[in-house]
Image (cartoon, rainbow, N blue to C red; front, side, top):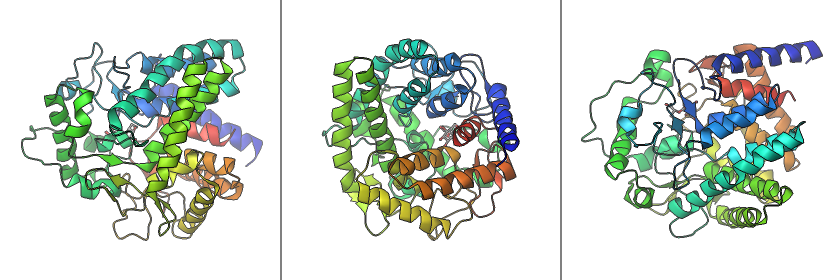
Length: 423
Ligand code: 9WN
């Protein structure tokens, strides 16, 4: 790409970020998602840092200002009233001073904080802001292992598909069958007003999402009880790998800042998690798989959640096998990395997390593969991502076969990732 083409795309990406900036936090996109989302914000901070380092730190600080007393960082913060999204605060009813949801999302904050710090031009500012965030991110990591790994196995479970960030992935289908739909209070979806219903989760899936919310609400959002009381407990390799990478990054950052206790605790979490991840490996698929904690069985579903662990310091042969898997996928889809293997009959090129390409996931996979020495495959992922932007703009997700833009438009984290890819 020429220098002027690159600076033109960056300028357009910055425009998207500014458009969705609410001052101290950024919304994912107007209309569809009018609040602050957890992992969106942390990844968005990387894009913000490109033109305003202080504002980038604020993005993560605002999220952590709404951390729960037990350490959990909620997946949505409802800063201001807006009836454009369902389920809103009146459904969650978590009783927080500023309304929040009651579940969490992938723990990218530790990774983002370290990356912001490493790249900072203003090291004094970065050290100050990072030092204040360290104990908060550490408390979140501790929360995960205390509340979502009750037997101390080194792997945490999600108790709601929304926690994974990959809402309607094929990974959840079988486990989701156990979630009833009786007693779900009547509701009206808002997402289908903003995006094509054929590209969104189904009505039946929404019933189950809401059943779980009502169930947890009935337990007073007491995290000490929710894991064991949930009919849905899935150990997702992508989710765990992000937490492991974040723990390792937080350990490095803490060491640099002389916070040795935080460093040691996170180093230990990452080490234990990496060993435990081996249980999720599948030679047949050349990637990791989810584990259904209730049945104790691996879930036969080759989704991008099992490729995402390239983001963590997994063993070299595992990274090599994942690189080969991505190359294999590149033979089946014009744009990588599809969120599900197109060879699987359950693959759906346009429906949200059942096939489409998402740039945030591409970013994490290519970052990990590059670090593991698979620069060519990482480059291929970057190229696909940039081709999608050039051809289809800053969409929420894209059809991996045609490149068609899908879901919400003018999307914040897509724009932030483009800035990252072009660095
Ligand atoms: C539920 C905001 C979020 C992302 C998720 C994505 C989608 C929400 C929804 O949008 O989820 O959290 O209502 O569909 O799946 O990854 O964080 O962009």
